[in-house]
Length: 311
Image (cartoon, rainbow, N blue to C red; front, side, top):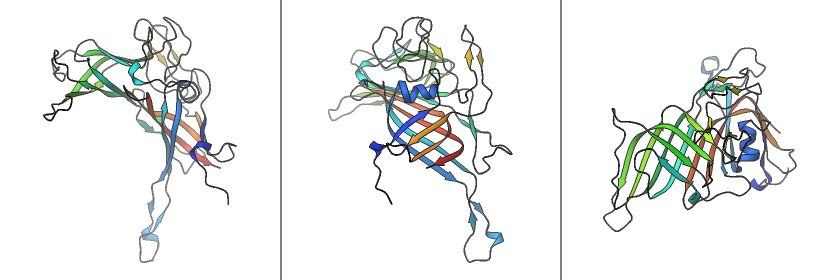
């Protein structure tokens, strides 16, 4: 019997490899993970018909797992949200105090026959992300609150920056649908506030502050190369295997890999690394929150595929 482990002894030791790998960049360069939760589950099989006891009978089924957590950005020197900003081509975007942007690559089950991991489910990401978010702030005395997007209304472009650099680490949405507007008019003296929720429509880009036209990886959450103007790198889905992925020069055509999920995630439970949890996993959810009075935080979920090995 050993001693009780603390979180200070644990770490996300590695995830994938290579400078251009989203996963490796996220945990080794882009952010500083501060929390990690490993969740494993099984779907029990009802075997009541084959036993004669006085209670239901069950056996274990096929298992699945994921890892969720939170990180600070950037890794070396986490920023405070006051450096961030929101820019809309049209709509209310003044007196803001925070924004959130969420990426969801829906797990698609690809569990197959004769894979060597008979007791585990396998998954790959959907090809396109569902991107949604919100931004919030105070009600300005001289500016009208704009309505949610009408069925025949035009869609605004939106830029969400995490710093105040020339090009800016952050994300650019080619169009957003403002789905709701919540305006709180306090009648007892508190500040009036407003919050918009939205869903992105079409292309979403990530950019870094590495310089105009630079192809080197910067400090962004994802290893994005700065593109022309505010657009940066068009996002599609996580590179979930080690095969070659590439964008064409015009950033309109994407070449996928072989389709075998093989990005290894290693979570060490103690400082020596003798206690660990490891398996193939890919980034299925990413949530960035930039609040004026807090460090910039990034929530994430790693979808496990195949066996989870514990030591």
